[in-house]
Image 1 (cartoon, rainbow, N blue to C red):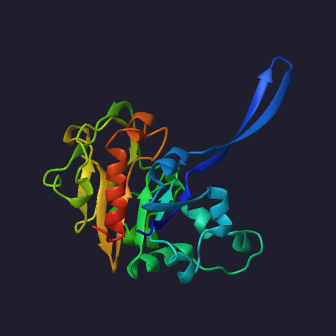
Image 2 (cartoon, rainbow, N blue to C red):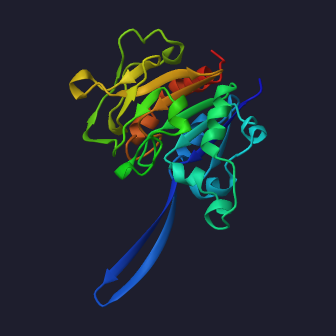
Length: 257
């Protein structure tokens, strides 16, 4: 069996800090990779995952049909629209460059698979700065995106549920129901022709967690929480149902189930 090629773009950040000790101070810079455990968990005979960090994606994210079609599925995780819209050629040199959001829409419509993962720079994101509302990405996602900061922080921890009638869907086949809690999601609205598989309980707003749909010849999904801290606790990532769930999801969007 040939492993499906997956491109995971985003899920990284750089932090700066100023440390003040009385009269003295110094600065430090640290770089963080939020998807290392996810990639380690999911990589193997089924899935060959390329992990493209945010700063790498600004220049190297695929912009041609040929480069996109090399992947069976593309995952956008906590990477704002600006990173894809403003490669160095545009931002620094004022040269024209392909619109990679339009390229992704075309990739899906001709049969590709796209998953958007939640985070501070997913969907509309913190302060509305992820900026995917009204873009070609929203056009193919199974969820509509709000025009404002769509983060729903849940510090008390909320346990998601399987939506009514969804238990027999192939993506949930073999997935246990004892899900751990989540600490946040991006609040979205499922489109009329989409299927909501997981959501928050009704008394917590019933907001969708896992939504799937089709666009043209392709399939897309919205996983509205993270794939690592802080919204997705380590207990959820290491939950015995997480790998089966994501294996089924990746197989479904790539039309293998």
